[in-house]
Each structure stands twice: as structure tokens, then as C-alpha cells.
Image (tube, rainbow, N blue to C red; front, side, top):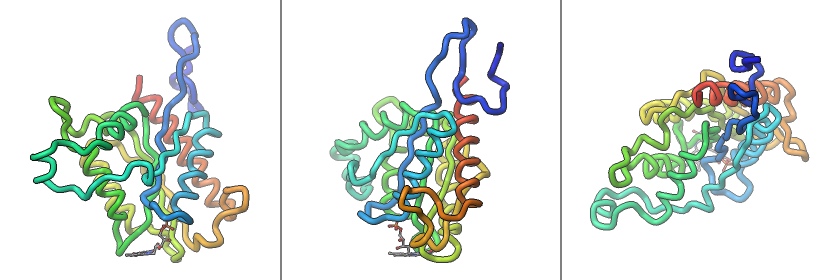
Length: 211
Ligand SMILES: Cc1cc2nc3c(=O)[nH]c(=O)nc-3n(C[C@H](O)[C@H](O)[C@H](O)COP(=O)(O)O)c2cc1C
């Protein structure tokens, strides 16, 4: 049976029906704050990815500190130490689930800085390789009512400009201080369903793009 066209496709099988690996999704938040709402949402997103049949890796940008991008630094010393491992991490996944705070109507500086360094060429390898052929889902959380929706417009444009396919499904979680249960799910069932739907679409498209 060819399951490739199945709507709920979570695991691709090859012609001999041997099971091959799940869609790998790299989930991370654009906040390094200990009590970050966006990190909590990235954790909820990772769980939703797993429930949709994907394999989620939860990355914390605190584990990947990078200097502020500086063209002179790059020209004199090359890529900072942490950039190549980060590029490899992106490349070893089929999709991204990026959750960003909204700062003054845009994404956070730490997220933009990370995305920029990852987009720099490494030797002969084009800078866009870590993003090429990847699908990305976006989400944001904010204590405000709009949930960081405006920042996602910018994040979408940045990821598209480096070659990722960004899903139309997305999530902006408002009133974040009361938006999570103790178990890390979303208190608003409608928002939880939206997260589940976005994660399922991400897993599905990641598998189809990988073929
Ligand atoms: C410089 C700055 C600008 C901010 N601008 C916005 C904004 O435009 N919209 C918004 O909803 N919240 C804004 N906030 C509040 C953040 O949403 C809030 O601090 C949030 O908790 C940050 O995300 P985190 O909890 O994941 O760290 C801003 C906060 C800072 C520090």
C-alpha cells in the first residue's frame, strides 16, 4: 500500500513497506528568559508534533549563545564556534517550529541574530542550505491580547527569504500568563486544537517535502 498520499501520513514507508524514520521537527523559542511564555509554547508545540507522529527536538537558544552578527568579525575570524553545530542541527531536521516573542511589533533580537548567523555560508556551502527544502510553522505568545501576531509577519518574511516554506497555519497565544495548564497544555481548547492542527500539518508537509 502506498501511504504517501494518506492525509494523516506520519511515517513514510518505502517500496518494500519497511518503516523509515519519522519527520524530524526542530522546535525552539526566540526567548532566553527563564520563565519564557514562548519557551512553554515551544514545549507544547513539541508535544503536539510528537502526538502528530513526528519526532520533535526541543532546542533552547540559551544552549547556543552567539555574538551579535558583525561582518568584520566574520571576515576576520570566520563563523563563530557555535554556528556550524547549529547549522548541522537545522540540516538534520525536516522542519522547524519557531515560536517567537513580539518585541515592538517584530521578532526578538536573539532569534533574528540566530537565524542570520545560520544563514551565513560555511566554506563552499551556500548559507541557505540549512533552510532549503524545509517547512516551518510559526507561533507566538504574549501577555497582551494579540498574542504577538504582528511579529509573525516579520518572522514569516525572514524564513521565506532564506528558502523555507512557511505554513499558513499559525498560532498567536494572547494572555499568556493564564494560557497554560500545569501540565503544559493550552487552557483554551480552541487554541490547543489550533496548535494540534498546525503541528499535524507541519509533520505531514515535512514528510512530503522529504520525498
Ligand atoms: C523590548 C520589548 C518590546 C515588547 N514589545 C511587545 C509587543 O510589541 N507586543 C507584545 O505583545 N508584547 C511586547 N512585549 C512584551 C513581551 O511580549 C513579553 O515580555 C513576553 O513575556 C516576552 O516573551 P517571553 O515570555 O517568551 O520571554 C515587549 C517586551 C519587550 C522587552
